[in-house]
Length: 449
Image (tube, rainbow, N blue to C red; front, side, top):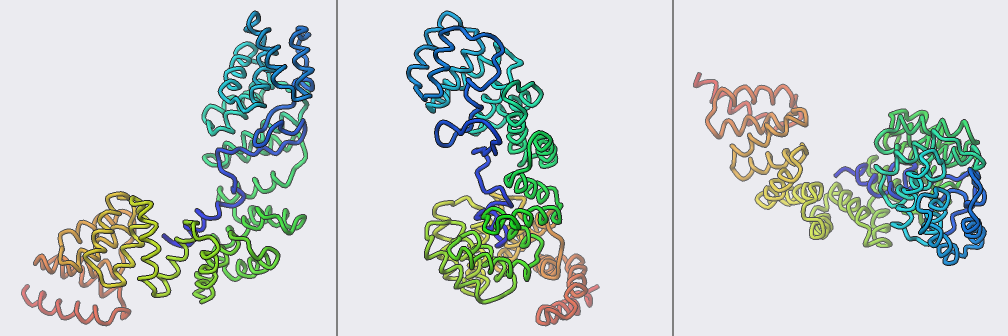
């Protein structure tokens, strides 16, 4: 696996450093969540009174701002036993259950509230936010989308903006263009926040608009030079664009401000490795020593060790990772490449064979299998691997040589001659030993014509 790919695993992409299933909505109004890790609509006493609440419901709502959940729950349960379709009471019961982390009960109450009053903004939004928070994004999206089309009443435009922001968070992964539109709708209703700018940067990056993404990150950093998400996002972007000198300068300065930041350290190591600077290895070794259980750091260190010619040491790390993830094709390929560097071709062949079975769309797995099949005198397997590889990666001088020698071994003179000529054209003096061998074989093969 390339360092840039490992970095994405380690640091996340752009501003998306939060898990997708833990939707973090930037609330612009309303009360703070009543318990850690949740996001609720404002409590019932601040929402639109569609109709006069029944006395029992009003009593329960008076208890909610006091966080007297048990008493409120008891009053609502008694009332709902004889009024099971009261949308207001159902919403209140959902809010109370949500505040107590009774997720299944809250979902059930909010769902009943939506059914009782399909035009109630708060019920749709609360149900959607709760479903998003527990990772059920497919069910969450239609509820939040419905809320964006409804009148928020006394809750006001800022809470409706929260619904649009929630929708943007859900759409960010699979439909960044739609997420951008969601965010724009939110900004029509409330001022732009730092979280909005970070999300805009991420969406621009995902939509292949690096200049817009970079500008957004720099706007955040201009206001808050120590913003961790903007720093990591801009570092990621500069690396993705291969602006290594700019990235190195930026990351070194960022690390002066936060010398122990693992994401920035990993990013700088990636840049230094790309620039073939020897500082990458000690930097990663230090990071690995401080985070020995971080698998992504271990992968990065193994990659740099391998590139530095320390195949045996790199393979110790990859083998340890493989013990935990035996079907990780990337690890198997890295393991195979380390074995090739140690001239252990038969063992490498097994690693590449397993990798190609797990990830048949990975051209690197087929490349490794073709090479090691040739080295272990299995020309038919080499040809099959080369044929599969050609579906995903372009030919080069090395693959032309493998085609030629495999056909030559199988006594297919016409095909061997053709590929030896392809190899000589592509090699252009870069592989003198193999070019001499190809010319010698062509002398023999063409003489037989």
